[in-house]
Amino acid sequence: MGRLDKIDEVDPPKMTLIIPLAATVELQDYREIREDFEEQTVSDEEIQETLTELKSSFATAEPAEGPAKEGQTVYTMIKADLAEADPETGNTELIAERPYEFIIGKDTDEKSAWPFVGFSQNLIGAEPNQVITTEYTYDENAPVGSLKGKKVVFSTTVQSIKDLVMPAEDVELAKKFGDFETFEAFVEDIKDRLLKQKKQVYENQYIEKAVEKLVDKAEISYAPNALEEEAQQMFEDFKHRISHQGLDFETYLKIQQTDVEKFLNEEIRPNAEAQLKKRLVIQEFAAKEKIKMNFDRFKEIFDQLQSSAAREMEGAKTKKEKQAIANYITNTAMNQSYTDSLFDRLVAIAKGENPEIESDEKPVEGEPEAAIEAEVKSDEVIELPDSESQADQ
Image (cartoon, rainbow, N blue to C red; front, side):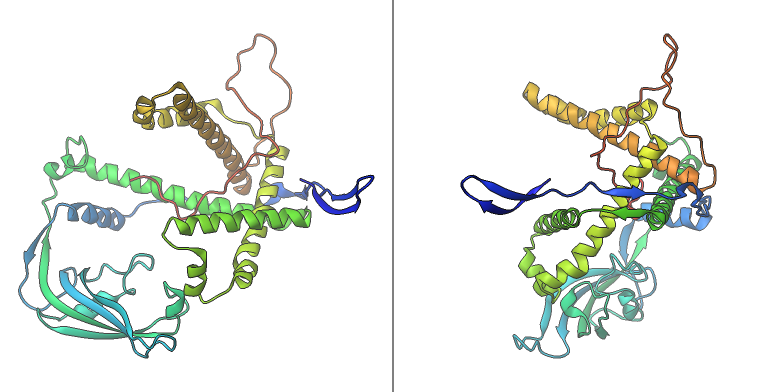
């Protein structure tokens, strides 16, 4: 889109417009990219770990005797104070005393562990009414920017210790999760779901690596304002996203101890540039490979979306509302099936299979077509898969 640069004359009107040139992409020898592909498997340990998590939903907590040990649930009251007072407020209180349950040994995930990874190990050997004092200095990976480099003192009062008594591994347990006739069938279902999940995560990561190689090989040029528009959109999306977390942008900057210009230059613009390049390269790849939508895949996704939206469609009161739902289902199914075709082709190329590019020849009149196909539009948005996304359990 062009923009007004300046008004040269008013009468008669004479203006200078800046009209950006269309982006250009040269993919070079993109069909030569390669990436090692590993088939995914599921171990017995992974199956057992998942089974234990599922069983814990129906476990009962019973009072335990003796000091706390691995696997037990410890009910506590915990508070946290800064080792040194905040220079601005003079306060040391970080977290007011609150109840919290710890399962010893279950806080190893960096994304979910609180207050930090491995904290529960400090509770091993503790007994009811005992107060455990723990000091911890947060590094650069602190969950909150203001905690980086700060030493925090946690005071944990043990209230009670309990054992989790797991239900028996039998068909009765299996039936709590589905219409399984045997416990073995339930375990096999767990294995299948885990494998599907691992394959999805791995394939998403594989696609990201292949796209990066496409970008590295490509020669890309675009107008400066294309990057600015990309950065502006990403900035607005970010502010919208944190607003849903009850956080305004100014508060976010204070928490992260940064300012707008630094945030834009270090966070938004580099990511916007990477995103813009990826999108341009993927669009050119789709055009070169003549990617088309597979109707069988479209129908599969359409049926799934239609089934999940049945209640919403039933609750729609007007024809307009129903049409909006139907349009959403159709557009989503088309975009997803097209994207699947695109990335299936990219994976095949990266694995060295190099499938043939379909010709533009139309089928002979009267010859049945195997699938209804739709070509990509030049302005179609194609999103990369999220490598951290997981398949539905």
